Amino acid sequence: MSCPGFATNRAADMSNHALLRILIPAALFLSTTAFAAIETLQFESSTQEERYHSLISELRCLVCQNQSLADSNADLAKDLRKITYDMISAGDSDDEVRKYMSDRYGDFVLYKPPLRAGTLVLWAGPFVLLIVTLIMCMLFIRRRNREVRTIDLDPAALEHAKSVLDGTVDDGTVR
Image (cartoon, rainbow, N blue to C red; front, side, top):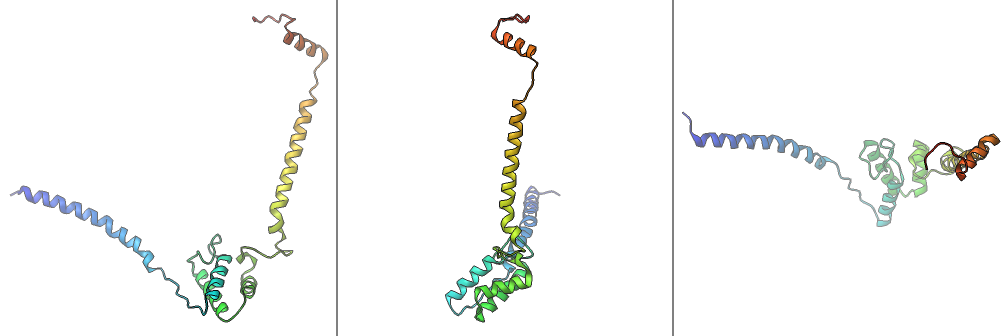
């Protein structure tokens, strides 16, 4: 026994189930950001808070490498933010925090590494590369210009070419 209303309701139920099969995983996927921990730090003054935010923006996440500590959600970045907070709360200066991080993790943790013998390549490398590239381009252009000027033609071929261009020699072409 078939009822026309039953078939319509069943089709609607199936489309609702299909919709739920899409919406539930999407909602679960999008809600995972709700589980991200929000750091709530208490500072004694707004100056300390500004220093903290400035420092975590200057320090590189060693896991992500192209993100600052402020931008990274890696566990190491969270730990380094906590260390930075603790040091600022203890009264350490910005330079002491940078020195601690640099001594422990190397100059790579700093977005602006200090000028030392070990970091000289980082500072001078781009300029040296630019100068070497410019010199190589100049030498290439000079060599190419010299090669263009030193084409040797025998005198008979040169005279023939001039007479063809002047139109005084009939080379068999129709003009």
